[in-house]
Image 1 (cartoon, rainbow, N blue to C red):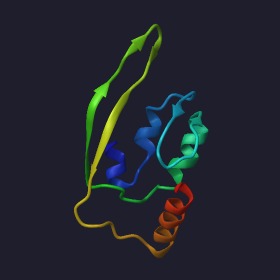
Image 2 (tube, helix red, strand yellow):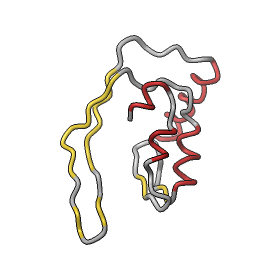
Image 3 (cartoon, rainbow, N blue to C red):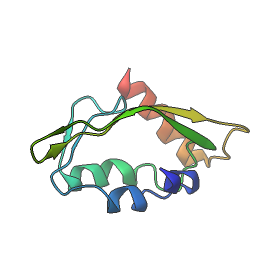
Image 4 (tube, helix red, strand yellow):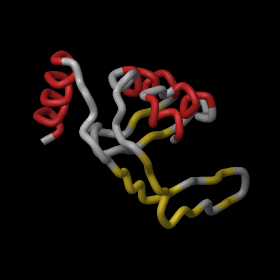
Length: 99
């Protein structure tokens, strides 16, 4: 998650399995595979989405050769990020589409 403090999704992508299944509130359905996750993350590249974060209640159950990391993400923001006009329009459009 530290890469996101600089708007850089690459560290998160580097640790993601090629067959990842990804759930998030910003997407209408789950994403299947690293390519789909990269496409989502590219939309946020360069955006400072939060100043700091906490991973609350992490859990990593193991069942055979499968593990699933779950946690609650608490994002903290101090001063609002300085977004370009294009970034502001993209964020508004994403919010509208996810509603």
